[in-house]
Amino acid sequence: MKQFQQVCYNLDDTQKLARKFARLIQNGCFINLYGEIGAGKTAFVKLVADALDVKEKVTSPSFVILNEYHTGSIPIYHFDLYRLENEGIKTIYDELREYSEGKCVTFVEWAEFNQNEAPFNHIRINVKYYNDDSRIYEFESLGKDDIIEQLSVL
Ligand SMILES: Nc1ncnc2c1ncn2[C@@H]1O[C@H](COP(=O)(O)OP(=O)(O)OP(=O)(O)O)[C@@H](O)[C@H]1O
Ligand SMILES: [Mg+2]
Image (cartoon, rainbow, N blue to C red):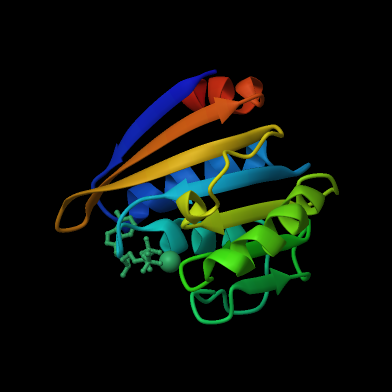
């Protein structure tokens, strides 16, 4: 397990971080995002999607549960589990495993609603509200150590 954290004092800082991260996951990655409402989970996904050349507008999937983007350099699947009931979470759990296997980037907001920790390789990002436009992005790898190692040296 590797960890890395960065304070982003404004959205520009978050954009720089998102660009670095995008370069490191361009061959695929599964990412669980944590953090309170309005912390900056969707904002980060948007910036990573931009960096991966997604052409369409990236919006929050909180009402639709899943948004897909196929216009960038790699397919991106963006889940938000906030509105799923327990039963739904159980069914989506197997689906999420499938999304961890293909060559794609998968983001899951409100991943804590998925009761079991993902058993496959993935990255956790915890976003903490600091103040005004400042956010702390904490990264933790569970089997994708090289990505987090490189993020800290870029
Ligand atoms: N440094 C920063 N990094 C990220 N977002 C920032 C920053 N400064 C301000 N913001 C703003 O904070 C808000 C974050 O909202 P966002 O929708 O990303 O939250 P979220 O974590 O996805 O919340 P939810 O749980 O409701 O989905 C955005 O309006 C964004 O512009
Ligand atoms: Mg969101």
